[in-house]
Length: 369
Image (cartoon, rainbow, N blue to C red; front, side, top):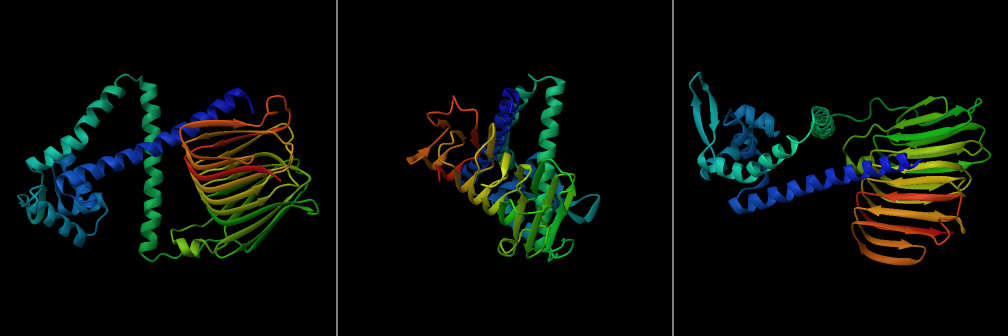
């Protein structure tokens, strides 16, 4: 990996970490304002909509806040009693009810959003049109991802089935002259077991339990897309057991969050490994590297354990903090910010691992076996 690629990957990690920190800071601000004004978070969400719009119908407020008509009536009862909203008949259609902001609504809104809007606008006014376009497009795409996930959650709440559209319980593809392989998991996965197999004649072979994912193969790239819906306990019953042909080098990318990942890659020629979108339990046995092999874990993790062969040097860059870090027997508790640890012989080694962790982690262990 070139210096430019390394810097780019580090910047991606930093942007993701800052976006996560922004969401958490916004949550903390909402909690502080809600506590100060005696509101709950649902009331505060509706108050924010009313502050921006000035007046809306009860139906529009329900749609924009994601509440049912029954729930919005309860919220409006509380807001009206607290002096944060007035309900009046719509002069144009007296069958409709308009919800109108009050002085108290504007006070809370100004305190919650006013200074942020002023500071944010001042920052944006310093940016060029190209920079503003880039910021807008990133935020728009992030919003679309949130909305897509919300639709999935709402679909489960409405009783949609996640059984349809899955693939077969077993899958494989011939090696057929492939010189390099790439394994990609998209949209997350539950329990995954990956191993290198020197006796395998196919490019890969997989067995699935639970709702089977869709699998596509293009050249040496194997894409496994889980049909995940937000049913946590049912999702955890979905398992994937994947064997990879050890005669070709592999890049492995696991996106969208993992519940439990176990990988014995000691027989593989590993070119890169990436686990992104968060993970719960990860344990990986790494092979001897050829050249500089990147290993990236981003998006936060509960427990990550990486075993490498004895004598293999490694450098680990950790951003976002870790509650416990074990590096070759050295135990460090509660590390924050950005930390870089490396083996004594790392700088002089041609064959080595470059590891990066971002988004925070509970436990990270890097050792040798």
